[in-house]
Image 1 (cartoon, protein in one colour):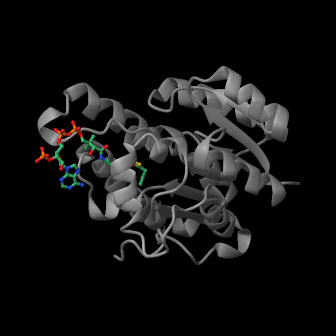
Image 2 (cartoon, rainbow, N blue to C red; image 1 turned 120 degrees about the horizontal axis):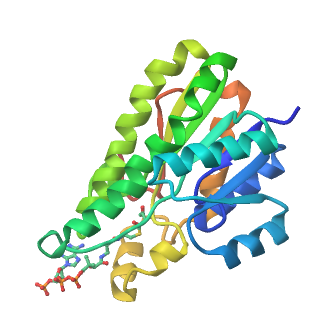
Length: 240
Ligand code: CAA
């Protein structure tokens, strides 16, 4: 039987590329989205990948949504916690709302996504947790105190889960994408974006498929000894 993968924020941007790559690799994939019904329907029509709507920042919604996915597809073997938002502002202008929204989605959202599937993974003795962090969780970023805090937090989550899951056949790893050609990066003012690309030795933005490839690698059954690691895919922009 095919393994089942859940990708949050899986119908757009990097998440869409991850959903498609996992499907191509033979997984039964469920992709979640937060708000855009039209785009999600178009994604399902194009790919055949089922989409589910819930707010990853809400524990009860996440738990109910995950129960529905498992009723439809079977127990979830692979979780890709990818859903994320930005609310960029220099710290002196950042509002408590901008802080909280990003914390709720990017950090608490990871807890809410992993926590409901964790007991089942422990019982079955298999699981793959893959969290999409960011280069900006590693190095910080002007205008992203909120976002960088969550993405650094993701690394703490996976390093702790890796230790807790290891004896139960569960691995937890993070991927830190650099600047990837998605709507999120395209929303950065053009001048700022140009200066960012100038800092990438590869000389271009990354492609979503280049991140999806890392996910397929980590999700595999034979990636069992890769646990608690961080894969950077950033065109040589930053080294830990
Ligand atoms: N380093 C130092 N100074 C900077 C700077 C930087 N990176 N960026 C802007 N500034 C300075 C400007 O030069 C300007 O200085 P002066 O006032 O002396 O002229 C000042 O900051 C601009 O300040 P403002 O108060 O006018 O800032 P703003 O309200 O216009 O907001 C910003 C600016 C929203 C932070 C904008 O610069 C921005 O969007 N930056 C990009 C942040 C970024 O990289 N986001 C990543 C999004 S993609 C993503 O998150 C995906 C991923 O994981 C990689």
